[in-house]
Length: 569
Image 1 (cartoon, rainbow, N blue to C red):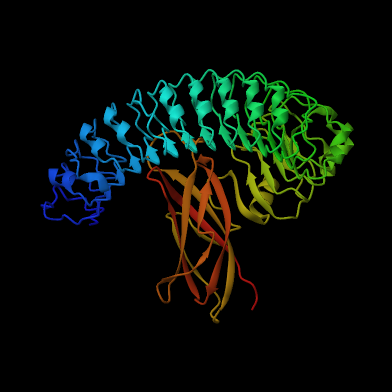
Image 2 (tube, rainbow, N blue to C red):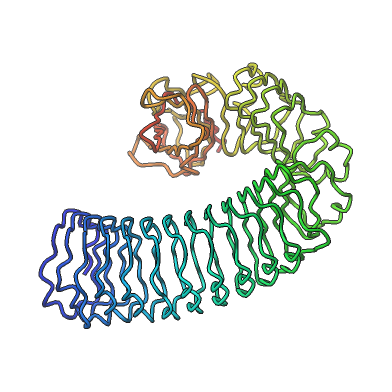
């Protein structure tokens, strides 16, 4: 029986005679207050789903007849505070989802769930502790994500010898892992993201040799890793981003010959990596914004993607020329960079510090440069000729920037000149008119005349095409100006906004298919122009209506404009 989304349903019919009922699905029956006691007696019931039943305060008692129940879903039952101890009678339960915000504790009877394979407690932010779980030998997936009040795990977790996935992300009160974690030798994924109180990892982690993904990002209290981590020889992904107190890595990481990705972005106290090691499988090394990191990392010659922007690295060894697989190299600009000619043909992304006053003209020699980041370079006055390989320019906040070298002819995928209020007219015209495959943003309160079809008020406009029939695709460039729907501050740089464009054939009233359809706008500012491109397919009409819609109740479209590029047939 499936009564999902019956939002006005307040009580269930009498089910006492439904002795053969196998599934009862009541997903998002938000008005349902009570589950009748007869449900706890249905011996053939296999699936009971109360997902999103936010008004349910308690569950019925389960009799010893409910041995057929295999799946119980109580996720988002936000009013549920406790479970009946009789739930332990469902001894064949395999999947249990208890993502209940107010759930304070679990009954001791869950020790009877010896067949449990998937146990989800994600979002139980009031739960302080777990009961004994020593009999959960068949458990494969334990999700404790967002259990922000959970202080520790029971040592009995070590009996879950078949555990494969353990999610403890956002358990911000968790101080340590039990040493018994080493008994979970079949564990493959351990997620400890944003466990901000976690001080140490037990040495027994070295026994979890089947682990291939370890995520410790955001563990801001973690100072070091145990040397035993080098024993996890199957480890492929190690994420330590935002471990702001991490000082060093043990030299034993040199034993991780299957390590594919090592992420250390924003580890602000990290100064160097262990020397004299060669991680043969390492393809991606991210040291973005490790501001104290000074030594160029030479821990693998097989790296494909190396991110060093925001570091203090100011010397690049000539050996990098032999890194034949290196395709992405992010660097921070420093004065002597030009002297390392062996790296100018390799850099793909260059970041400039906020104090930069001038971009050197030799930047055009960086033949593979893909992205240029000049974020908040407030003293920068101009940009010189840029390499033709460039596709991204982020100059947001360059408030003194006036001129650009406008000889660049290749399409760009992203141009961010937000808050660059001093740009001269030639630079503005260049940004507006250059072909872009994604989007551009620059200061401006009105849609420019370059856009031949404009609506100075509202979010829609109608365009009349050639009178002759058209049966072709049609490219267009759009421009919008955002306005806030209230009187709050004019900008919200920390958020993005989805904008949908609907193209309507006014002759037959049907929508015209086109791509990409939805655009992401960032940063959110008034008195700025947002420009993006699209392509409509199978245009047969001579009159089209473009309608723009923001997916937010805080922002609206003040003006819009379109310029068409209709290929000749």
